[in-house]
Amino acid sequence: MEYEYSDEITSDQLFHAYGTTLPEVFRNAGKALFGVMSDLEEVKLEHEIEVKAEGIDEQHLLYDWLSNLLLEFEVEGVFFADFSINLIEERPGEGFHLVSIAKGNKKIPELRTHVKGVTLHRFSLERINNGYRATVVVDV
Amino acid sequence: MKEKLKQQDEFRWWLDKSARPRMNVGAKIIGSKEIINTLEDAAVEQLTNVATLPGPIEPVLAMPDAHWGYGLPMGAVGAFDAEEGIISAGCTGFDINCGVRLIRTNLSVEDVQPKLQQLVEELFNRVPAGVGSQGKIRLSDSQFSDVIRWGAKWAIDNDRGVPADLAHCEEGGYMEGAAMQAPQVSEKARRRGRPQLGTLGAGNHYLEVQKVEKIFDEPVAKVFGLEKGQIVVMLHCGSRGFGHQIATDYLESMAVAVKKYNIWLPDQQLVCAPANSPEGQDYYAAMKAAVNFAFCNRQVMTHWIRQGFEAVFGRDWESLGMHLVYDVTHNICKFETHEVNGLKRDMYLHRKGATRAFGPGNPKIPEDYRSVGQPVLIGGSMGTASYVLVGTEQAMKETFGSTCHGAGRAMSRKAAIRKYHGRDIKNALEAKGKVVRSMGTKILAEEAPNAYKDVHVVVDSVHGADISRKVASQIPLGVVKG
Image (cartoon, rainbow over all chains, first blue to last red; front, side):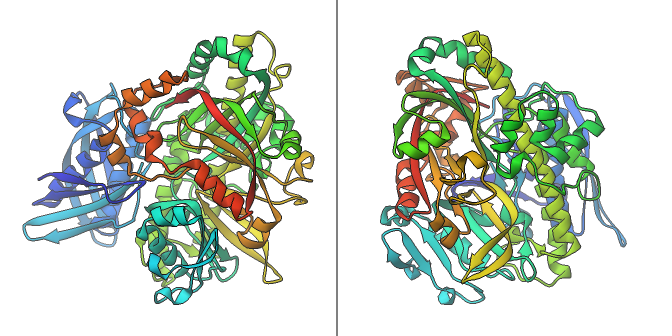
């Protein structure tokens, strides 16, 4: 499973994303984030934007990256539906860096809701048996 | 946790600080038995979380519209001592200075009904809506700095309103001391905010043409310029992507600050910094920039709303009596001074889904309303009812001059999207003679009226507790939504 949604929080949206590798869990978390707003299958991948992120650890890196995706969505007007994570590295004394390509379309699909931001409520990136699980609550 | 609530009277419930370890103060919930019955246990737990932060001033408060959110529940107030306490980006949340303004007219239902379709269309075309919507205003970098410094005053100085509008905004339409540049206000926030000035956005934000349905308090309604059958316009929106980015930036930096200052958190979302620390004050200055953006945003849209009415009714807005009743913020952190146990105390008040409700005589209230108290604007769920309340002396004594903000969700957005179809919601509203315009119909589903608590029950609770009093209620005729 790439990701799943949970209804348990009344005003906001919780999701879990999974991956056997760090790039995979990031990619799936990105898809879950945009999947809150619309159906990803309807989006033709015609536009690409490079999105970078930084963080003191992998968890903060994920937070920064998801937040930057929302920023680029609003500023560049591209609705993203898939992602290539090209680089995740730890630089001594500087923390973690990420470089990705976000793919989507300038023709924004009809939205069922709008994500305002990624919250830190229950936010986690943990190792599970065969990979990683991210837990994210977004403010909608 | 709910079983530990002790009922104090018909509308007050107390949770002692012994309810769980690490609570520094007790918590109070305002609401009828019906409200408490539907309140999630998790929301009560979130109140107790806030009480564990350093330097709270008793009590942490939940209003009758409270519901489980992230960090602080929506519909809550957290007051922290200005010296010993904290400022929290997490408690304030993303939608900084989300608020409501009400514009009156001297038109009646009979004047508006025949032209309603045209009017709603006109407003929809003039006020850009939708996600990441690009505003009609092109700002240079230095003009954007002026917007976030001067708030609604920038709009007035640039011919989009009159000085009387400013007098009828909370804080006079801007907070002094806003940061404008990095490092406090990031380049990311400026980039995200600049194209969005003068946009309604999406989600729960809307613009409604309403009819005053009932008057509960004639003398106060008269002071606010409201009467039965009158047409008014309600605008509900906030600081858009600019505020969302400032919140995001400071959630990240305060996550570092809590480690530096060794603050224990029961929920990471409650990230904060000591009130008088550089991190706390940087956030406060950046938050003010977002507050000012939102005041300016609502003022700019007010200008277009007035122009829309002028185009439809062929008279200038002043002769249509389109004066601002008031503009309130219901999502903010503010430095305020309140009397607590006979002593004046300076505090940082986090109102997250809560409205200021200052009582009569307060110098912060515009002169023309000062004898009665400030108007409190309560937006109901889309297409249902809204209220105008008035602040009270009791709110000053009991709730740091605060009351509820709206109906409050009763069903998750996801559940609402699954259960309702936007098209059906639109049809149901139109069957009642209301005109609805939105960017798409899907987005209407999450705001289905049934996904919210009954606004009348919420308002009856704050009225019953006397932390604000009913003045008028309005029902919508036309709805514009992002």
